[in-house]
Length: 104
Length: 190
Image (tube, rainbow over all chains, first blue to last red; front, side, top):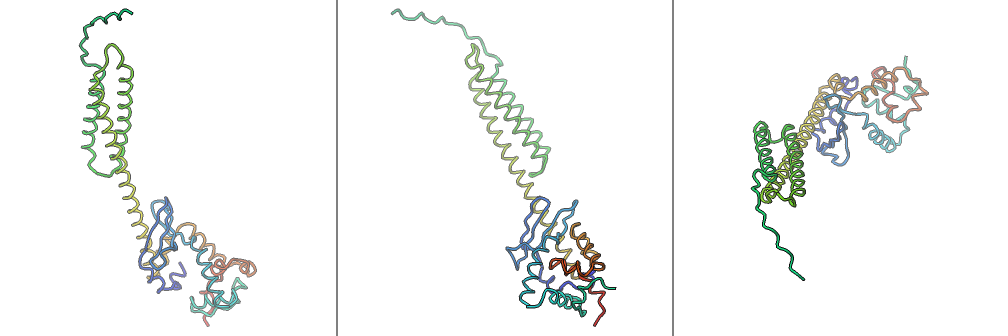
C-alpha cells in the first residue's frame, strides 16, 4: 500500500499491461497471461468469498528468479544490488547500512 | 410312427387393456407430463431445465426397464401382451430418453461455459481495477484487491522492515530481503 501510494511501482510497466491475454480457471484458482508473455502465467487469482483477488505471493518465486538473474548480470553483490534497486525505486540514497537494521 | 395328436383349437380370449397397452399408455402419459413441465422452463440453459432433463432420463430408463420386464415375463404366457404396443412403447421411450439426455448434456455445457465466461470477466475486472489503482497511486484500492495470504505477507514484511535485526535480514532469501529491508521512506533523503 505504501509502495503504491508513494509511486514506487513502475508506471510504465503497469501501463504496458493493458489487458490480459488469456485466463485459465480451475475451480477457485485462476492463472492469467499477458500478451507480451503468452506462455508464462504472470498473475494468479484466487476466489475469496464471492470475489476474485490477486494472489501476488504466487509470483514471488518468479520475480525472485528474475531479480537474481538481474543481479548476476549487474555483477554487483546481492546487498549492493538490493541497495541500488531500492535507491532507484525510492529515489533516496540507500546504502548497505540498511542491512544493519533496524533503523532508529 | 403315428402322427402326433392335433392340438385342440382353443378360442382366444379378448386381451382387452393388456400390459402392452398399459406400458404404451404410461409412456404417453410420461411424454405429456414432461412436455407440460417443459413449458414452465423457458430458458434454454438453466438449472431447472437440467433438473427436468435429468428427471426425464431417470423416469425414461425406469419405463424402458419396466416395459422390457413386462415383455420378458408375459410374452410366453397364455395371454401375452400386444407385441406392437410393447415395441412402440420401447422405441418411443428410447427416443425420449435420448432426447432428454441430449438436452441435459447441452444445457449443462451451456451453463458451464456461461459461468466460465462470467468468471473470466470478473477476473479481468479485478485485474483492470488493480491496474487503475496502481496508475492512480491508490494504495488502499490496490490493497483491497489482494488476497489474504498476500496482505498477510506484506503486513509481516512491513513489520519486519521496521524491527528485524540485521543478522536475521541477511539470512533471508533474495526477495524477502528486499521486502523486509527497512522501508526506504525512513532513510533520510541524500
